[in-house]
Image (cartoon, rainbow, N blue to C red; front, side, top):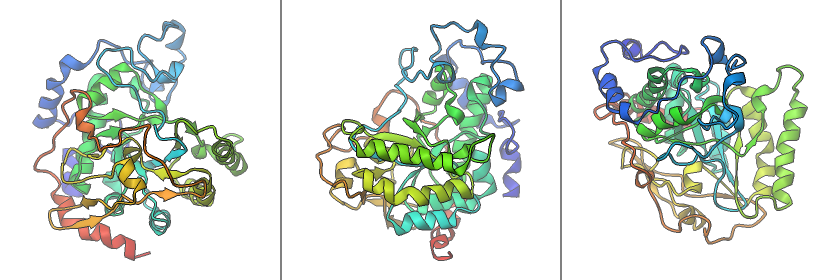
Length: 381
């Protein structure tokens, strides 16, 4: 990894376009016309950590920028931008995913998911991908969906245009070089997004995913938040699923691959979630995003294929194909349905909108050479 250091921003620092990176510079210039004239929120460095106290008093109460942190706005006011994904269309379905990976200690957790034939959407931080490349490769080898969670996990609306671009671009590039695929989805850290950030993401081919319900698992051990509080958050969602709250539309729960507690909590409540929901599936499956990456050789099943338990071959490298991702995890609540809330046929993320996806053609060599290491991780626990 040392030879890549000069090709990427410093890990865990707000990203900027690397000097002499002509590809990044050209791509940034090509999307200038798609970036609205919306100023960054607040003043750095305080705003990078979410301190907007000097900014919000003068920000219009009409929320003209559709700023999630201000008013939880998820339907852009700028023409041409798709709404954020905040729930899944299928009833009694849990959109299952984890932020902040890859984590260097996640093998036991990923083993647990594999043992339960459970796939999820993993929102990966670029700096973590650089620090833990084999762990990043395992997600694809295990059949999980990979999305972007930015380079340095800062409040995105506080960043300048070129910083926002770099946070996306270099995370996508790192995932391409190390894992071998280019994501088409992202989640804003802390949910912080506005129409300027959405526009840059959209120009790079990234759809914005938020959540319906926050487990707040990351807060355990902060202030007065205890493990019991997080247990109660899980239990509240389970109770809502049991009482029919999600009978017409599914839910996305915000959970994290952050540390031992958050991963252990996910395992602790998995059986109860499985009993409360009919289906637990990745975001891409729940929304029929059958082509989750720019590369066309990798497929996810549609929701109907998932319900029918049809196995879809998935591409890992130029030399390896495995089966994965198709079998849903059905709970005791039942496993019948017609997929009527979403398209019965498979749809591709490339069919939605006119965004030009970022291409990293010619990269992925690290992934091709190390794929079998990633697959073998499943055998080492």
